[in-house]
Length: 485
Image (cartoon, rainbow, N blue to C red; front, side):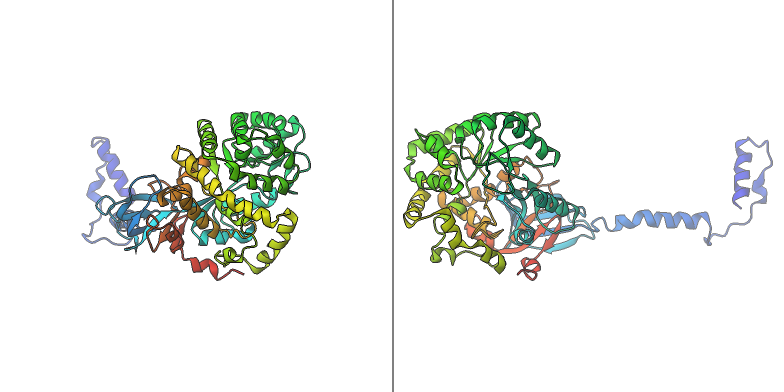
């Protein structure tokens, strides 16, 4: 039959010169029969039209919550967040702005609040920590130093989906001077070695390089020249270089506010010498914060801001260091996500002995806390960027939980809850030069946290987690807790 139709069409194209085959066509039934062109046409139309019947297939709409989107915009009331199958936010807005497509899964969040997935700006990730971060709403982490092979492997496994965990932005091994404090550090003692260390991190795909306490000016200059050439950001836990000098060389982020005391001192040499021993240098600086007056703090803050430096103050680390043996303090910490074996390995009394901390030191550390808070407050009010980091999982700093403590510390230092939230979302994303995390907007990844209470009224409400959405998939905190310990 098909051949006959083709022949007929051919005859018509030839203007009637050929045989008119239409005369021999068989009778067509008005009802389609199997194998007919009409039936095949109808089947094809049905296949094409099927997806259109459910345009929301595979999508999820979160409806009715109040949304703090991390951009600095006002709270969005009665919001609709439409998440696509690929784990990105397709649209966000009010119900009249974002129609819910037919077939989408609808999740009502009436009476809830939504914030972007939290980002911890200072971590030292280990395999056991990853589920803990996510359970506490931390969907991205900035890892700033550890065993290079381990950290890089964890990053890759999370990226490939082999491990469920937060997005990882890693430094690899820290770069330190001769006789480094950390066994896992890359030790450099010459300009050539400093440049080579940056080259290696670049080849490994590090997000940033981190310099450590024994890097001197002599080593910092070539290191920064190479980093600038290769477009690799450098962050610093400083010891033998003050903060302003490091910033002038190009260091754009300060961990723990290191180098500030040295920059304020008329005799920084004694601090540099003390940093030949890690704990001796750290303890001296912690005691000396109390000597900074308001005018000096303000001057240093403005100098660093003019040099476009961001700070990761880790106030929770300074607070914990001042209360290591204070049972009233430690009993208030949420260590429920830390395995017993890890808590035993922390060996806090042993740390105090190794660090040589005396009772007088603890008193001095506590006096310094108000000066550290004041510096953060001045820095923020002068327009500087503050990023929230926890330094977990070091002693008494629980992964996930300690970032919530850090936000509370920032509020205690003088920031508004809104600012503390931005410090743990948008500000860290800017530090990482990542524009699709730390915010809830169309096109961003679908990483966000649903809360049972308003965090803008009380920053402690960030701990009242209803569910965590990571890469577009929703999890309950208990989904992770069952496998802990």
